[in-house]
Image (cartoon, rainbow, N blue to C red; front, side):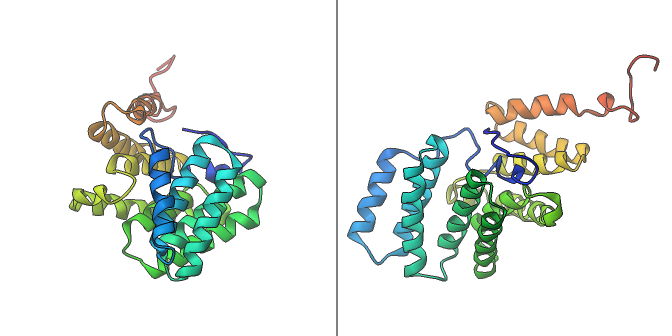
Length: 236
């Protein structure tokens, strides 16, 4: 997981939704997406897919040419369909990623605004809720969005638990959602609740890097290790 926070203001971008161990793109996928936009130049979905893949490549490589290419594709998608929740949510996410680079509070807010618009257009869209929630849990506390982010992610987890086949539709899985929820509760120092979600990660993806981190977090934040709460240190 990339730790790219720049002070408290930009800590919210240290785990934008690409932070998971499984691959998020291939060059072959990007090339196919490009070909699809040429074949169907009026289809906004094709440009959303291309922009999404290029955003992931930018996150993986930090090569700004892929950021620019992603922006061009997503701007095209929005121009073709200004009511496309998918286009708006990824365009907003792109702004949030760029805000980290530019240390721009205003750009980060603009990105969140676009993600909010996407959520308003499709309030039941699990993918939109996941992306928006993932950003909201990372924003500075003073922005008053963290509780909203937790609610979004918990709703996503419930949706996937009720219908596991939904995970095949999206670029994340239930273990990933629980890992993010655990992180949010850890930040609130609600360690018992965080532990419930870390345990879910271990149960769902026992061999993942995130499961290994979850085990370490459970050890670190276990009740017996917290002073004043079952503390068993020297003299007790």
